[in-house]
Length: 96
Ligand SMILES: [Zn+2]
Image 1 (tube, helix red, strand yellow):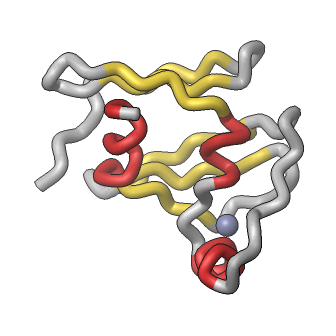
Image 2: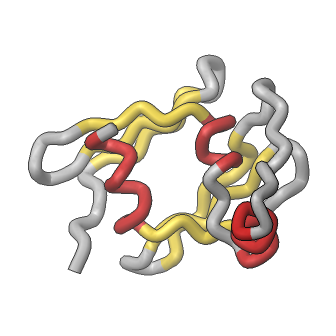
Image 3: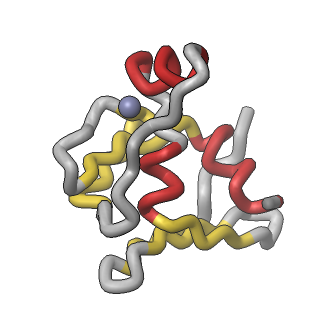
């Protein structure tokens, strides 16, 4: 099972979500990058078809809602809120 982040910190002004993992890794992921990686069925279908999710660089996280021990449901300032980001996926940002 994927470890849960030890800390989740949203730096709203910089547009960065900071995650710290129990193994000491830290990730600073921009909100735009998170939006582009949205794992909802609609965005996945778009990428599978060879398209890119249109992301404005100024897009911001509007809300972060935990989904149990599974992940985070992220709401963005462009109104998109269908993406539930598994911790397993979020942890891959740390190594990049
Ligand atoms: Zn999506």
